[in-house]
Length: 146
Image (cartoon, rainbow, N blue to C red; front, side, top):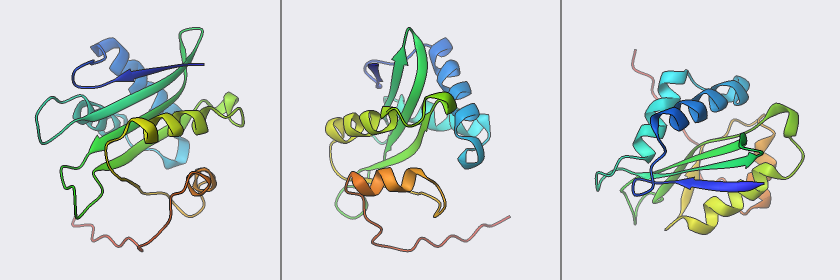
């Protein structure tokens, strides 16, 4: 598997960003978001503004995406982790091959600072995060204003 990295200084073209958004929308399944919201996270990761940015990783086999990770910078170092893992997905037919682990190890390796993520209690990816050293220090609470 080849891991490709896209950043504000090495951006993906519009066609590639659309391909990544479509992949995530399909393979995040019940843990995903609307495609337009996924696209917002991708655009944020590739934004060169000093208060934004991050990176996108894709795992590719024979030029086809088999996994993807999106990390956004928070801009809040010191009191909130510097990075947030927004999305990780592995192709439904390729799960169990270590693709997610390899992508997460690369994401951890290239991140400057700590990484936070949100995971639903029943999401099988939770075990991967724990094996990689992620802990759940806090219980997240949200107020959804409609």
